[in-house]
Length: 206
Image (cartoon, rainbow, N blue to C red; front, top):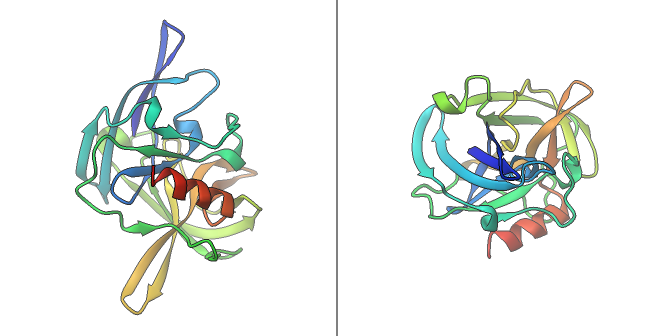
């Protein structure tokens, strides 16, 4: 996603970030990508849904402030609250390859191999270069986990997922949203936790 936000009447800031398509009309991302204490109003936005390095689907101005949902009481850079859902102005012609965990499902523990994909800001979104990496979960918390993947700026909000084998083949379960770094490790907000799953169920059906 490319977003331009306004501070007061004079200052604007634009930046790049990542998200994952949930269903055909909602993006799951980090809350700090779309809300802050300083830059609050989304002025313009652009969304590209990509597979590998190919541009698959493109929207200019796909959402505004009214289409953004974040947890009640969200505070800037609080990892426990750092998730958001955006309702797009129009449905994607492509269905997401990912699914969310079930409420009774705990797909990760320390040592689980996870995968991540997003647009690093250094050379990412404008060049449509999708970065992919894999690494093990190194630590688990009640609402977050740490993992060993070298992610870059602009990848905030990108999906962290596991691949599970089923009778029909493989399925891809989003287990986290990348939100930052701590003690040298990448950090994701867990998606297999009851509060976020209830929020996502409500927000993606509104």
